[in-house]
Length: 203
Length: 203
Image (tube, rainbow over the protein chains, first blue to last red):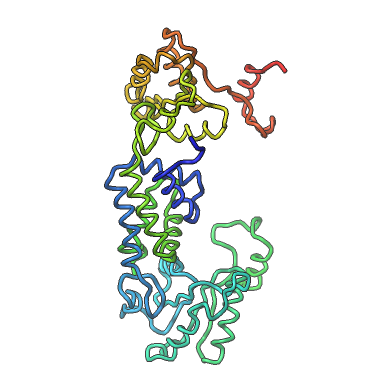
């Protein structure tokens, strides 16, 4: 016997190993779990994967994932159309929604500027945002929030966009840097603590 | 927008979350990875899952996973038919095969005795092993290695089987306990170190 699995078992282990966050051991564990699972739940899994590709698309306006385009946020009359929150990925929209603090619109860039990975401004949905601002609805926009990741790529993208949007007259803001709630000063890294100091607020 | 995903995206996240070792965040990450992946690899994944259930079965002799029953180990004329290595799960066969130190046959129990989970001897393939030993090929067996997990359930199962097989005249052995190769005495727990001392070997 070779020291690797063969046939269908190998295929399923290989397929799962190629997913993010799943190593060969995890994939093997999943494969044996599926072997022991009932037929229905296994078919559900396979079908949900196929349906994902056929029924989920991206909103033509904001780039969010949706089953109808425009997405339910873009067409919702109760959303505040004067604010657009710009995020890197569709999943970031869910994170902002979960705060319950935001009622405006979104715009998904599809990543961040990253010269090392050959991602430039033209690879992101920045031109789409500019077009959107020129449209009828877009002219109501008074504020663009840059909710990008607090890392080098997010920073670079925010700086680039702030400069690009600087002469539109729209207020450009970004998320506050500071200490995570529930954390401890002792464990804050010096850069975060420095930002928290610089951004200190009067009580 | 609800603060949960909807439709096909929710289905795929739910389906992946139910797999071992994948939490909701990991499932979300995988779902977005699949959304961005090319059609072919996504279909491959779905098909491999479906094929797993249709083409993988269990060897009627040893209980190993296989696409043909008896499995390729049981029918391999080069394997030593006088030794049977008893393991808990089919994946343990792969672990033993990878050592390159074993050329005998296997027998998969399908678990270990665990009163807390209501698993008794009759839920394991122990009767199958006894039948196998009574058969023509089985009468050649001179040694049964109990390669069970070094935990309470594995111990209990090994003790039970050693007693059960005691009067067959077959030699019953089990894997050595001791220090893992490449580890450090300092980090060995006292039970393992105690076993390593008790099982010390002359050099």
